[in-house]
Length: 213
Ligand code: PRP
Figure 1 (cartoon, rainbow, N blue to C red):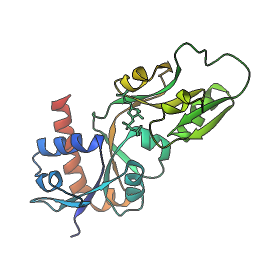
Figure 2 (cartoon, helix red, strand yellow; figure 1 turned 180 degrees about the horizontal axis):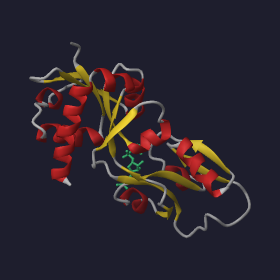
Figure 3 (cartoon, rainbow, N blue to C red; figure 1 turned 30 degrees about the horizontal axis):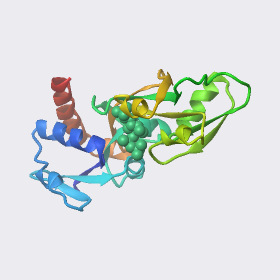
Figure 4 (cartoon, rainbow, N blue to C red; figure 1 turned 120 degrees about the vertical axis):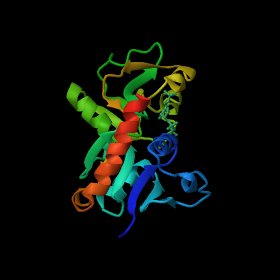
């Protein structure tokens, strides 16, 4: 049978995911020593890991070329389409925040405000909920630059420790948008066709997650 493929979000979530899999007894040494390889076996199992960017994890799982994926709830909220979210993995915790320059009143004035963000859909939804008309500018990273350079009035971004905001003179205006953490997602067909394998893996991951909590 084809290996069970798990797409992992490269970067921040990668280390925590491997830590959880190792705690659950899986040999991730090939992934740890990956070099520039992007598809790596979990030794001694019929599983393999695919390393991808967050939004691409969703694309691969949704299209069935990966059975499972580990991705942040922020990416799911921004791109989420059609797959199952089967487990909250408990790590990668952060939150969405609206933030702006310290000492300015974001809600004053009548002109539509400009918001810079990596998350245009989440941002649109957030301001629709407030009935506020805004203009969105999509930024790919280090969004904190936009208000500092005078491109936007504020940003909508994820905040973990708050240091990036603080060190750049920005403050949180609102951060009750949504709590975020890493999720295990599954392709809808895989969940039916490879139910036993997926359930067994998810159960092991959940047991370890509970121990780590
Ligand atoms: C994220 C986010 C913030 C920062 C928040 O960026 O976009 O910039 O982390 O973390 P903190 O509250 O702990 O400071 P990331 O490091 O993923 O890089 P990017 O901005 O280039 O996407």
